[in-house]
Length: 65
Image 1 (tube, rainbow, N blue to C red):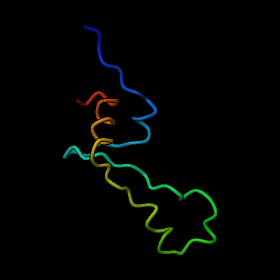
Image 2 (cartoon, rainbow, N blue to C red):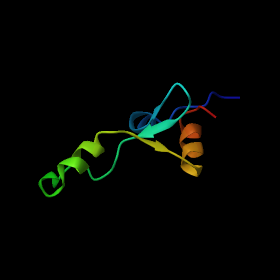
Image 3 (cartoon, one colour):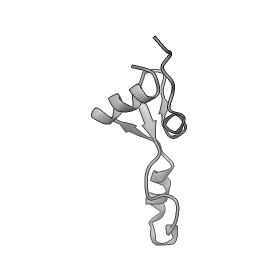
């Protein structure tokens, strides 16, 4: 059988932690920041865990499943 290839765009957008969680960046953090509260802007920098069906799909795309 051929080797599984990693989808590079997925590898760039998501990181897998040592415990196997998939982390992603938050949305809405790029522009129009002047209208957002400082608390919201700080929250955008904290990664979020991907859960459920999407986590399984992303792991498959990264060749981890």
